[in-house]
Image (tube, rainbow, N blue to C red):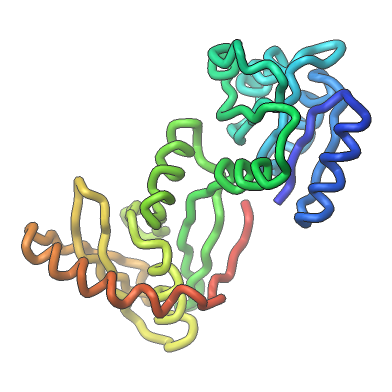
Length: 245
């Protein structure tokens, strides 16, 4: 986890730095909006989140956010401010959320975890599976992923011929890794829980193909109950081989 902190107050810089060290997050510090833009451009693709103060010298947080949104690939930006009376301006600038100063560290920690959600991509290499974390494409995509997370669901893209995207229970990714990397199976089955396309997926690791079988409502509900009973066993498994992009 790497965070860009844009804050001009030295005391608040020190406080934020202490929190990042305690939580084990890497971070860069910017003292004004211009420095925040410079860091965002120099380290494009490396930040999981920006904590953006609003009232800063040289350039405020609104203007800095607008420029970052135009010039840099999407990553979440959260306003950290003592002024909540002009909340609409945060959204207009392209921010994802805001946190009121002075803030409770637990609230900050929760917000960071909420906003740094990523999608997942499955790649195959020599019949082994690799899980890559990817930044959401834009704010709408990030919002979709956060809504899925509330339901214990994730969206996963498979690097097969069709480039399929599947909505699945968050624990099923561990089942898939177990099937291919540990059990050395050639096939793993699971449900696509996308309400617009409720299907049973059959993933073949040897040729990276994943045909999907449509299920009617009755059969889908039955399969769903069965899978719901199974997913708990994969909760504690630490099987994912992750590569951040």
